[in-house]
Length: 216
Image (cartoon, rainbow, N blue to C red; front, side, top):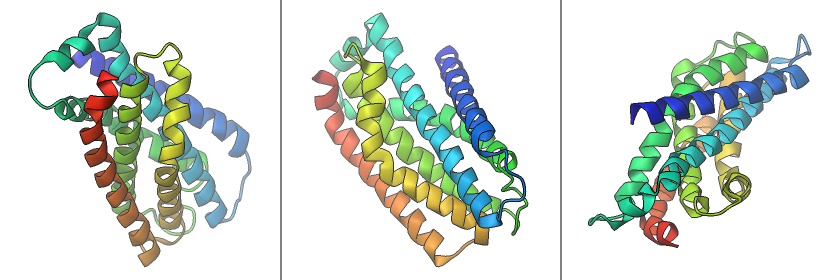
C-alpha cells in the first residue's frame, strides 16, 4: 500500500510540476503584470496542473488492481461496493493534497502572484485548495472506475471526466484569483459554498453509482 501511494505521489507530482513548468515558460515570462492579471494567470495555471494530475492519480489507482486481476476479486467480497470507491478516493486524495501543497505556492511564485498587491491569505487559500482537490479527486476516481477495463482508458478518462469537472475548475480558479487579488469577500464565500456543495453531491452520487460502474 505504501509503495503504491509513493508511486502515485511521484507520478502526480512529476506531472503537475511538468505542466506548471511548461505553463510558466509560456505565460510567466512577463514582468510587472498588474496584480489582478498575475493572480488570474497563477490561478489558471495551478488548477490546470492539478486537474491533469488528478486524472493521472485516478488512472493509476485502478490500473494497478486491474492489471493484477485484483479489482474483480475486491468486487466479490460481501458488503457495499461503495466503500471500495471511498477507499480509492482516499487513496487518490492523499497524494493529490501533498502535490497541491507544493504546486500552489510554486505557482504563485512562478507567476509573480505571491506578494503582489495584498498579502496572500494562506488559510482561505488552503480551504479553497482542499475543496477544489476533493472535487477533482471525486470526479476522476469515479470515471477511473468506468474506464479501467477499456483499452483506451488513458485517453478516455480525461475526455469523460473533464467536462463534468469544469464547474470545479472554474470555481477554484475564481476563488483563488479573488483571494490573491483582494482577499476574503462575499464572492469568495459564494464560490467556496458552491465547491462544498459540488463535492458533497459528487461523493454521494459516485458512491451510489460505483457498483454499477465497476461491474459494467
